[in-house]
Length: 380
Image 1 (cartoon, helix red, strand yellow):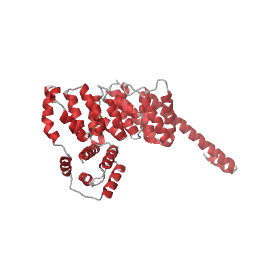
Image 2 (cartoon, one colour):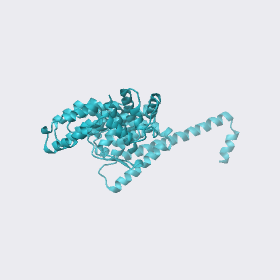
Image 3 (cartoon, rainbow, N blue to C red):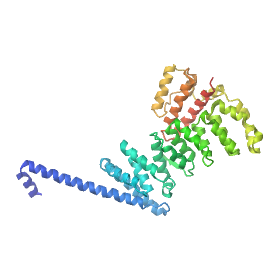
Image 4 (cartoon, rainbow, N blue to C red):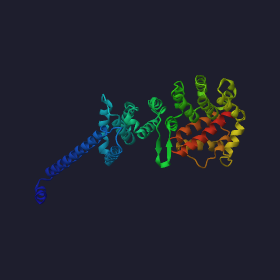
């Protein structure tokens, strides 16, 4: 070290600087190569993961995957270009690894710029959601699909329909002690995409395998626009399970037209269980009205009256704030003199915004919002 130090001091300054820079560049290249090798090793480990492994092996896999993400996070400025290049190569492969597409795709989508996010979406659409290894990683698939649905990319809708509409597993949201079944996964996925997703849910009614869940999702995200399709579903399958789902949709999100449909159902067309059910709900259905809704909403919080300009401003703020406003009484919206269709449209936007929060509180807010939307549909 002493000789090196002496040599540098005796050397012409410009030459010394050039050599020093060259040495630093060499060290940087060596580090990058080392990092690239580490990433390639982690990807090779991903390729080796199998769904039907023992408990001990799964524990090892999880440790490897956690270590890989720690590596990716260690210096994203250095790791992301490498990961992007590897992901691009995997997307183009004749037989890509589904787990590599899922794992690298999720990381790149959550951490890269718009170019990387677009590549990551291609990775999501390239993988086989029914592969055993993806089924074993349902949590990650849901997380990735949910992130992409937020971008409003229409290509995500067929993936939701083809896989999540029939998914039998569950995913957890530990920070909210919440577990989502297949229906609630679809509510979040279609809901965060936006109100236009109702057309995709409605289209699923024509498939008998998808119709039960589609009806359940319409109970959360539907409108009178899906009434005819829901009625056709009941015509095709006039059983008790379909009937109860159709009635739930009609009464919760289809407004007065839904009520009229339910009241017009002839109990004689159905089996004994269905006929008894229709008789038991008829009185409550016939009494559904705007006044009844307003009475129920008023019980949720104190009565409030605001100028229409303030109501409009608060709705805009809620939409921008992921549906949050703990100080805004729901009945205030019903008291407003703003046009009904405007209020419904704003509440539908707010519903999509609220579902950007992956939480049980968001689901509660959606339910309250749906009560307001349906109440407004009954308002003259």
